[in-house]
Length: 127
Image (cartoon, rainbow, N blue to C red):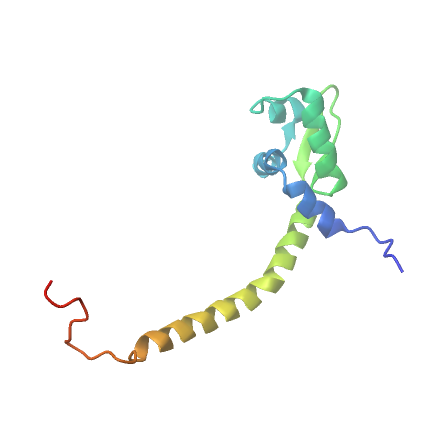
């Protein structure tokens, strides 16, 4: 059976996979901004920026409004919070694994190596 429920997290991660869209999100994190202002730093047309904004809007990352001729965009933090919560669920797992790796490496370093003696040189004779 196919899950017909929308994959909001997947949509959000897909939207954030593009560097232009991440830059737009970073700019909107500073506050509401008009579409024209968002487009200014990019070497692309307004329609191309609009396509990026539509992807971000479908993913629930931004909301667009209308203020006369101005089209302000603002960040919607709920979608970002969902990503942060998902990542946090794996953070503990990876920290535990890294802690175990660190303990293993320390134990390995503490063990003397077979065939080695303190103070003896293991270089080639005569050099």
